[in-house]
Image (cartoon, rainbow, N blue to C red; front, side):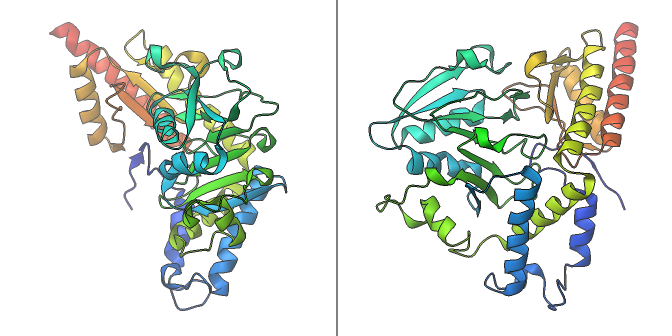
Length: 367
């Protein structure tokens, strides 16, 4: 069966073993004679799938008992609004660290709900780096500080998270959740769209510390209140059953691989391969992100000019590579190497990059 060399930024590659298991169960899951898409979300069969996903996530991420795990809809984009609706009270201010387009969007949505401020920003360099902890500034009126842990468009990632004492740290981890070991206790709230490392699009994971759940938000729309979903185990309304089922299969796969620690080792090795190819290309390929802020999920790089970029992408497509186009904000190319992207695919990409450089440079000399 033909399988693409998939470097899409999202929706992204899923583990082949997950797709194969889903295929086996497609018409008859748990001997019900139905697909998971046909099950009632109130059935015992789906409830078991749902609760298993929660249990696996808690185990794999080592989530403490004082946190709730929710499966919601609306993507990370809805969380841009739900977070301030639930955490930003009158007289308080939400502080945002700007490291890319998604943190800008989160800030803009929060500004529609209440008072906001910029705690730090890397915008002056077109987001080539992650601000250091001592650059982050917020006042005593802070309701929370928000960061985006990985920036898909610009290829930057937080290596060390800011440690806040009294102020909750809120993190959009949509594009690097499960890619490395983290200390959940450092965060008040984590949210992540599933379509990078967790599963398919359609479900969003929210991990929230219990003391941040505000039971007095009686005027908040029911579906936008975290307490609603906590009380109903994320089953207040019909959930995205297929997405949650596939998420549970991905979590099983992560556990079978040896957990997040093993995935972190793999991701480090994959990233090193590609960054070494960039750094050893004599300037033919140039990384957008500063070395100390480089992402292990999204490798962004440019070529000498637009003509070289166009030819690179054309030849890459013919060679079976998918999703290497860079975002218009940066240009060039982007290789998204999430958990499910095999090391062998990265090795093939590096081989292609080296061969393209040699052939393109030779053609330029002859011309």
